[in-house]
Length: 477
Ligand code: PA5
Image (cartoon, rainbow, N blue to C red; front, side):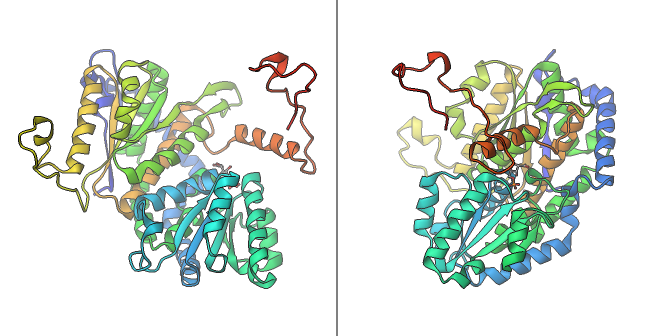
């Protein structure tokens, strides 16, 4: 049985009512044809080797290589710090948050079965960086520097800060033993440094881009070091990947998601796609999806080179917390959203709600239920309330939150993203808009080969409150 399922009745007009959602007959008509075309474009790119993420679940040699590195480091270090940003951290965080839970670093060594503690250094925020470095023991900490390009300023700056931190506290010859680099197999400064200094490395396969790298060494190493079942992760991904190679729309879960979300956007103006897990451990998965969907589909040019302004806006949310924050907007604000609920079927510890205070009606009805049951009732009620006013939603569901199910979810969303790219007519694998910002940053910080850009002052024309004194020149950074 598939590790993930997709219930999409609430995206269809048969459920939402006349004029809302997609006519189900189209799933075997024009949408089936539209998807078949998108599917064949994706297949052609897979065939050409451009979509390397599809091949990762079957790469047992890669997984075993990562596991060996993880095992060799795991016994020496009590803390792993992953230094990376964007696709170089969000996937690993999604996996480890889902499978280790929120209290991993506070758990005793016995409870962690002596696997290392795990931290992410993602944003070069000086407060976060210094706070973390002040808390780790440099003698027992491994820093995994993750950058496919080896040039991302945030990650390179943090590498330098970490190296300085280690040099001040360890013997010179010990420093390199506290680094592992995960980077391009051939190019970039990390690769060069590793070769010069004998630092161990893991390779990000060339045709695997940052936001599609969660099942490569980028996501697998932190998972393996902390004892996550990486074989299960890849098994679940492989199962879903094989379902997603099917050109028949109704038999392809990622195809269904991509096709109905695309139709909801371009035909009905439902351009905000909310991913709303009802499970705290999946909050990071929603953040990972936000990057995947947003960076892959938000494009100014189509694959034909013609200008476009394409891209649904992904919005992560958390049930039931955001029922008390965003639901009012989802129910009564502009009808421009589709809600994808993410549901886990069962939990090891559903937590019974005790039957106390039978005399208080506001409490007594809860007794005898479970907290898990309460969350599911909230989710069902929310979906139904949306349906009754013709607002679309769908449910992506896994039976249990284990490695196999998580691998399935990761593959489902990656495949849906590349199908959506084909449907929108954009390249889901590039990110020229991100590169533009990176180039300006390099120039501003004086990197060789990059012009110092002249920047418009942000208070140009006196548009600042309070107004700066007339004699005070506005400052460029
Ligand atoms: O998806 C992407 O390509 C980006 O989000 C990158 O992962 C991010 O910019 C970090 O790049 P790098 O891994 O080269 O440091």
